[in-house]
Amino acid sequence: MISHIKIILKDNLLSAIVKEYKFDSVQAFYKELNAAEKGNRDYKAARTEWEKIYGDKTADSRGIRDGLRSVYKQ
Image 1: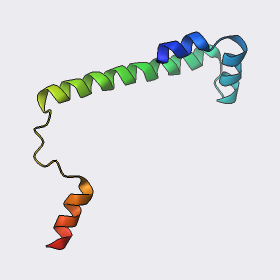
Image 2: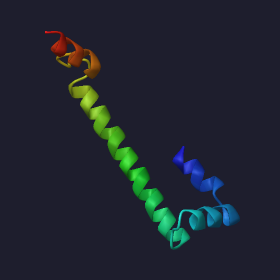
Image 3: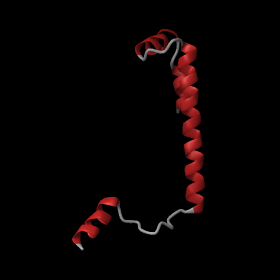
Image 4: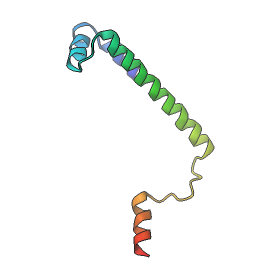
């Protein structure tokens, strides 16, 4: 999806976005965009790996709120 943004953001629109978000240049914007894309890919890969290892094997599937409620009821 992010790669589609690169295609859509052209000329005046891209320049307006760069100015609105106070980037020094279009190149600086693309540098940040590429870093964000890489971070997103890295996160997805790490999450996939985590799911392979742990999956549904978590010790307690209750939510934090439920866990706190049970502690305070005691």
